[in-house]
Image 1 (cartoon, rainbow, N blue to C red):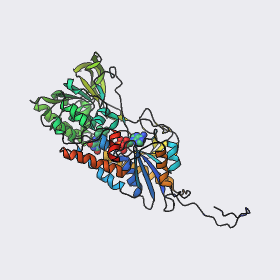
Image 2 (image 1 turned 180 degrees about the vertical axis):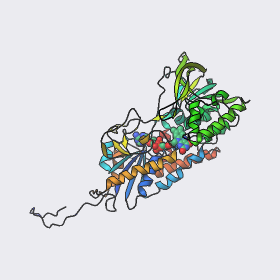
Image 3 (image 1 turned 60 degrees about the vertical axis):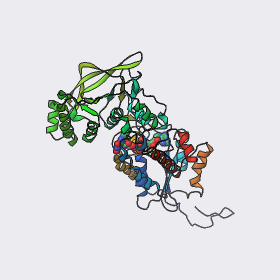
Length: 484
Ligand SMILES: Cc1cc2nc3c(=O)[nH]c(=O)nc-3n(C[C@H](O)[C@H](O)[C@H](O)COP(=O)(O)OP(=O)(O)OC[C@H]3O[C@@H](n4cnc5c(N)ncnc54)[C@H](O)[C@@H]3O)c2cc1C
């Protein structure tokens, strides 16, 4: 800035350069959209960058933080949920602020963010389900695991879903991944074992009246290629009062799989899964009324119903063939058969939900990016100042911990892009401005202290009932508890 005298002549030649972005005189302002694992890990990585001075505002559409740790991880996996303690430590950093109950695309637009922040990080996850794309998917009784999981975990958007398990004895779960295993356990175990957890009250009531006694797990690949981990399938087998059944012929290996295993390209889990499944297969059927039947090398090709309600799933048998690189892949045979089921849950993956103003790759269901830098479209140009982490970046793969190095990698790009950047000093009321904007729009913004009040309230209610917590499942009730 050059000082100018009243008569318009330059008073001096002193040049005052703008402060560097991310320095004490001009902190970097970052908006993180989504408070799931990837959002928290991105904030943590930013706080750990050398001498970077940064203020992170973390937005979430819900009044509650932690994304799928609260809304996805199964209620009988409470230990896994304790990862939130790490997030609470990150939230205690003076540069952290939580702005819950604020939805990007509804309460706030990308232009608002661009006006208030130097960089934006999308950590919005993948919140909708992939579909099978076969006839009959609209029949009553056909549901996505995504909805079921959000429903039993008390996600406010899914509170009104209905799962009529009281008229259902036999259920199919399509998929062999960890979500399929979660859904299977929740459906088949004695509901009293879930009663001490944080499962939503409405789900516990429905499960207590459930007539489900058999779950058929449907995997399109063979037992050696199953997506579940040895621990996950063992957990199903070890459920009290439940038998895991496997047809002995389904663990006989084809030549392609044998060569794959012998060649050393298979993951270690393949051998472990096979050994365990073979052991289960020779055990034969057990005497428990509750059963899980694991079928391999089958794909649903049609869902058949009567009076608009599912009665059968038509399955095509698959065989394993070697792809060009030798990887075993399934392909359909000209051979189908029917399984009688009254409900079917698809657990075949998640995909993102497009947000107005944010690029979206409709085919892959994620935000197009180059190593975390948002692109206008797949293969398009970089959108300056916008980044993506977690499932929104790479799709629905990986456990909670996988998101930590992934977020760190995006943050490295954010820091690279800051090099040499300067900016005008911030106005004194800068931190208040976004809150003023939101309040002006009638948004009841939830702070981290507010969330902690709600958290304590839920835990106390739970304690009185001998439970981990009793979740509130409606936004108004949450806000009511927070505001006292
Ligand atoms: C059913 C299920 C069970 C799982 N179980 C395990 C397990 O036992 N162990 C394990 O390690 N991993 C598990 N995972 C994987 C783990 O949950 C994910 O790796 C992780 O949650 C992905 O983190 P994320 O931050 O990308 O997305 P998410 O956790 O989905 O977080 C996204 C956040 O963005 C918010 N959001 C979305 N849209 C907007 C918007 N427009 N405006 C504002 N906020 C928005 C959401 O409310 C949410 O809080 C499980 C996943 C699922 C689906």
